[in-house]
Length: 317
Image (tube, rainbow, N blue to C red; front, top):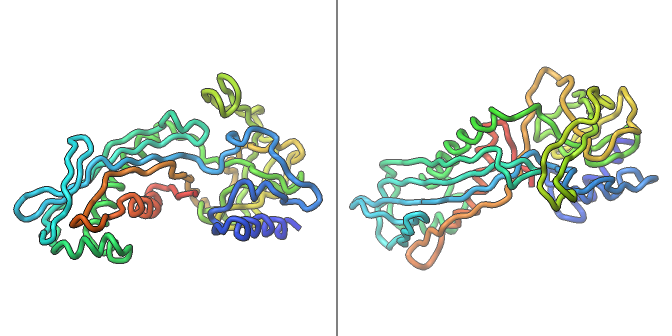
């Protein structure tokens, strides 16, 4: 029955929201996993996060230089902006950005804050017709040095973020977002995070401490309510963005929504990726010939999705 139940969860998301399995909706998960007992939140929704971190990225500057050493692009700090002309042979470029990474329960207080960027010399790129195509075509953009410059800038900035985070990062964890029954718990991570059938997890109830009302006041911390796990769950069914934990020891009836789930035994000692939700991406504009614009934000989001994997993260929408 549990395999069928998890399929109901995923199908609800695909049919109702049009999302992929990886992009499942928390509200759809909560709708009805057990046909005999509809589920509801027992705590504030903000206390049941479906991702580990919130990421905000701001592109501060994006400058390209032609063979005459004239700069084009933008620099928000210097308040510099120059649109690309019709016949420009680009020679080099540089990009700078800022990243803030916060806990999903307390995104306003960054766990890591970094300034980074990258420089490229000798583009061998060509005239502005290439830029016009880059503005219009994803496929073409990814073949240009612009994509490489963006990836290098992201990689360098994320490296600083990851170094800062490693000093404070605790044990990998996720949360119980739904109860199929007292013996089956749904967590919002699956094969994309690296879970495998047979993995075992400790499950702890937690208490969240706020200065006032949950989700409306300043978040202080969370703590486990017991030193020992309430129960142990075994992965018995998997999807890209969700998994069913079957309780194999302990009392599943005591598990609360929002309970913390931590690794106990992982098959073949494999690693687990941590999830990031992109809270915001902002940037100045790259105008081409006054007629088109390279959509830096859209391209950047796509590049982030691939680069974060290098640092043990993945993007959760």
